[in-house]
Image 1 (cartoon, rainbow, N blue to C red):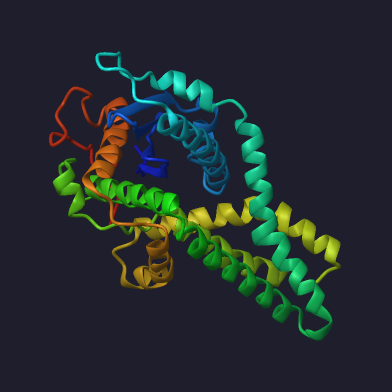
Image 2 (image 1 turned 90 degrees about the vertical axis):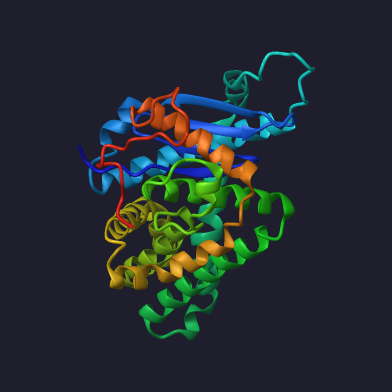
Length: 319
């Protein structure tokens, strides 16, 4: 069986984890209970999630869908009032049904915002100054530098919002939980807290690699008319993301190599903008979500206490 990498995403007051066949999301409700929900992944998408290059596009799309639904799910749970004493535990499926409404529209808006801010706007800014730039490669490098500055500025700005800082705390919990699992530690809050918040497969590092790869690709395209440059920035994004995914996947598998660690160092440093030290309650959400997908995958028996887990060996990633 091919090596499988478990991963996830921080949501509002919780963590989402993706396994081989299922996703699970654990959110801390107003009454301090953890609302846990899981569902199977799309078999059609999973079929292509092992094909090199194509899997990057498939997994990126799936991550966007799952991430958006999980965010809306967590917002619904966080906004719900505490149930009366003695009432039945909250129904995660009911929250997810509510969260799934309007996901396509929300995803479309998010995609338009991302493409506009990080790909179209940098090109338009460079276009205004292009008559001062003689070399096409210099124009593309300037565009890449603006794109990178936008990414850094965006992360710095959103990181100042108190609510986002809470999400970044859950991001740290997600990383610590995955790192604990991959290091063979028991999945308990005390053991998970001993792990680092930095992880080579983080989405923040992925975004930086996308920017770097895009600079190289767009330099090769030269400087065609503005319309074709705009079109290329939009059409080639899936291909750029696919190459970036393969690069980060390969690097994660060779993380023990000093050169690989050196190349990844800027991306790992960037993660410090999107992670915060989690408290034990945040870590408990990460553990609950990961345990659920491990249980469905047969790696961790659903009724077994957290410290007792037995990976098959193929699931343990290098590093």
